[in-house]
Image (cartoon, rainbow, N blue to C red; front, top):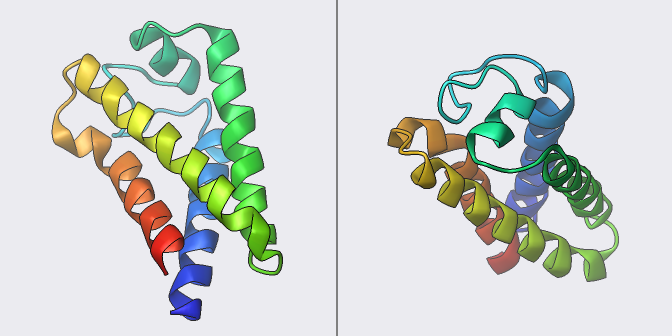
Length: 120
């Protein structure tokens, strides 16, 4: 199970870096509503730029803590728990704006991976 937990932590971290750094200003099939960037996506959800920055900083910090948690166990449960809560929030935002389920797939998969980390 240790290999699965490590893999899940690394996949979560890579996914967060991909979304919040590499594709931050790019259109993807998973953006909420008709947004073409992260900024537009948060506006679609009715959330401010300040909330967007806070969520981004939290997700990047939590992703880093999950990677560090490969060696420092005490960081894993808090980091995965908060990441899971943020992913539930992402799912709620997609639901709020009436997105088709496919747009919620990345958030759902990240939530599943956080559960794998928490229970493995």
